[in-house]
Image (cartoon, rainbow, N blue to C red):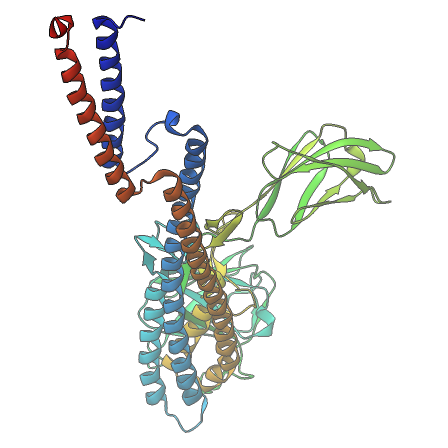
Length: 506
């Protein structure tokens, strides 16, 4: 075969381009420090890289959520510890005020300390993390607690009466009825003191139809709800002992809660005319229920926990002799009255008023980071379905703000019996706080464990990604040196060949 100049030139260009392309590719790897810069470099490795990057992105998001959760919970834990210390101090003051050796002047001094604790607890209950209030449920942008007033009586005849106080006063108020009679039916005289019994003013609660009755206390208004027909008894003004001495009212400081709650369950019905639907249980998510068939007293139904995207079918319930049925669903029950009116296709949607804010800290794991203030500190609360605020009982019936407010009133008015009554209530409120503190501490531990686990997984997957994607720098430098030598050799040999022709042999 005759080797022509064209063949020689073509081979030179091909070999030069190949060696230069290999050198250029190595230079690109040295710049990016990656051995896979395009899918064609390693198709299988590219798919693995995308999977690992997506996983690392999720881990980073989970880690950020865990950090945020730990910040919220660390602050909550610190707040609860401070409030716990104040309750301990308040219990000491309560014990002092309950003893007979303490004078009214001493109790007035105790009241000053109790007011300082009360105001500090309100400040702590309004704590915020990164501009968001941590004890307000979902309403993280609004102050959960504000100072307010409430009223109460230890007279058993006034059991069931709700009190609504409007106006403001820097001192607690004691009210004593001077007439015996029935609220609503009789005109009742009373007297009240705003300075601990030093001076007294008189007033009258007129007869009327009710159901609510208003007492005016010179700048304060006390409305008695559900009081019609209740009996009050005249006090002996010369007897400072409340026990067996007529009807007394106490107006005292408290705090009103304006955050969210977890109290309400309601059911939206679609179809099902004449059927009364109520939910019972603890629902962490909305649940949809669909009636698939009604055959005699057997109801076949399906339920969905993802807004109807998927359904769990084949569930059954029985209609009892009263025409009612109870359908078991995740979180509790759907109780249907008048179930005989059910028809195929009827649907019900169980909703809950949820105040919890949860963050995902791992796949399939979430952590509640906030708290509902009224379940910890109590106070008074106006339900969205209600008309006036009432005492917000916590999970065990204890109420810290109400108890502290009554203690302040008893201290400012020198009432020893009141101190004795509130000892048990203060201890109950402390137990509620300690229980919540333990819950918050447990959640903090979960956040810490999640952080450590995420860091371990992230480190492992980062190493796996590096093994697929990152270049071995020493190996690359050796390869580049070899490729440079090859390219220089190709250029040198090519220049020598290009100089040769038939004329060199003539």
